[in-house]
Structure formats: C-alpha cells, structure tokens
Length: 337
Ligand SMILES: C[S@@+](CC[C@H](N)C(=O)[O-])C[C@H]1O[C@@H](n2cnc3c(N)ncnc32)[C@H](O)[C@@H]1O
Image (cartoon, rainbow, N blue to C red; front, top):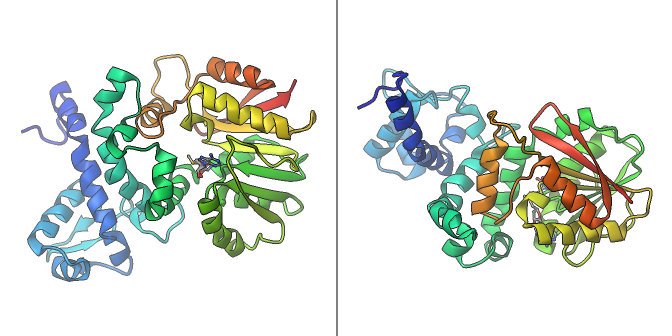
C-alpha cells in the first residue's frame, strides 16, 4: 500500500484516485457537526459518539483517519481536538466550510458519480440523477437550498474583499445584486459604502430567507428585496448591475437572455459587473478549470475564457473590459453600446 509521503508518481496518483475517501470522510464529520462539538476543547470519542448518536468504534476510526491528514488531532487517551484545518468545519466561524463540505459530499457527490455521462453526452449529470435542473430541484428542497446559499458564502465569501479592492464602486449610487442569494456580497459592498443603496434580486423563496440576513446586517433601511426571474426581467432602477457566479451556471443562449434582460433594464450610462473566474488559455494550474467541471456536472453551465465572455457581451449589447483581482475571479465590466 502506498505510504502518504511517497513522492513516486504511482503513490501520488493513488492518492488522487482515492480522493473521494477524503470527500466522504470530511462530509460525515461535517454532517455530524464534530467541529462544533469540539469548539470548547478536546472530547473523548465516547462523549462524541453519545452526542452524535453514532457507533463509537466506527466514529473513532473516522476521526483517527481524519486526524492522520491533519483534520482533528488525536490525543493519547482517545480524545480528539480541533486543528487549524478543522476550524473551518465549525459553523460559527467566518469562512466556514461546513455547508460546502455537506453539499459536496451529499447530493453533489451523487451527480459527480455521473461525470462520464456528461462527458459522453454533453448533458448535465445532475439532471440525470435528480430528474430536474439544479435550481428547480432546490426550489423543491428548501433545506438543501438553504445549505446551497450558505455554501455559496463558503466558497465565494473571500472574493468580496478581492472585488472591492480591485474595482472602483465610488460612482455607484444604487447597486442591484442579480441572483444575490443570501445577500452576503451585497451586504459587504453596502457596509463599505454607507451612502449606497442596494437591491437584492433573486427567486421568491431565496429572497424570503435573505430577509433575515439583510436585517441582521442592519441594512434593511437601504436595501430593497425584490423577487423575480432573471429570464423574464430584471428591476430597472439601479445604476450598477452586479452578477456574481450567475452566468457560469448557464449555457450560452441562457446567459445571453439574462444579460439582455439586464441591458433592457439599464440606461446607457449604467454599468454591468459580471464576477467570474476567467479561464486562461495556457496550461498553468488554475482552480477555475475544476470549477468548470463542477458547472458541467451540477447546473449544466461552464466557466469561460475572456474570448467567450466577449462573445456573450457583444451578443447582449455590451462593450467588455476585464479587471483582474488578487484572487482567481475577475470583474468583467460591461458598458452599453
Ligand atoms: C451560484 S448562486 C450565486 C449566488 C450569489 N450571486 C453568490 O455569488 O454567492 C446562483 C443564484 O442565482 C439564483 N437564481 C437561479 N435562477 C434564478 C432566476 N431564474 N431568477 C433569479 N435568480 C435566480 C439562485 O437562487 C442563486 O442564488
């Protein structure tokens, strides 16, 4: 059996091939909220098994394996504690990855089991497994939709500051976040610009849930919540139209429809800001190349190159300017032509 620090190509490949062991083990620990149970200090496996209603010896084996890769630490007397790598599995820390670990290991995992189907047919694996497109499925499964919204903050939360550092919002008086989910991105922008007003636009069930989030952020006096469908229309009384990780969920025709609906709502001096990972055309490592596969499998969309965004923008009536940030995301600015 390959040992973990064996640098040979065979051993490295073995660990990559076994990657789903990690996904599933981390998922189970997240689902059982082990990190939350350890936040006040080490606990014995007996104690954790009682608290989670699990089989003691099996839980011990799970935590022992996770500790061997630095997630949790096993002490002498079968006690486990948090490590720096386990901290983000807590639900109550900034940048929490708990929702992401559950979403990836639970329903998305089954869709990834049909990646071969997507590669062979060009169709969306998620739809094959669940019989409905992602966002219809989420409407029918409110708990999973809530988890999805939290997972979006898990993945994209750190992108807000990269966007704010790289893009000059000073001319914006009213910002609409189209498909803004739980409102966390809009809240970050409004908190930085105290005179700015905002509109959070999303599907009705999402907007209903986001209400509480906007209120908790103390922003309900300058943030309007509007429910709707961006395939039909987008509200027209903002001057900056922000779409973060919306276009990558959809195919080209659907994307052009969304962008045209934004264009229709905009005056000639308004701005469109599409926040996405722009795929480089070289052979360098770039995590967006993996997100692209996730987009293929789950919503049936894609990450795109600058040239591909250029074609969408032109078709929807925008001139494009790409502004890179310190992270893998870019601000793709559209000016009406
Ligand atoms: C990938 S999430 C991105 C959420 C958020 N913009 C972010 O960056 O975290 C896509 C969002 O699009 C919303 N959405 C999907 N279909 C929609 C539709 N037809 N009209 C409006 N919003 C929609 C979803 O509810 C979800 O909040």
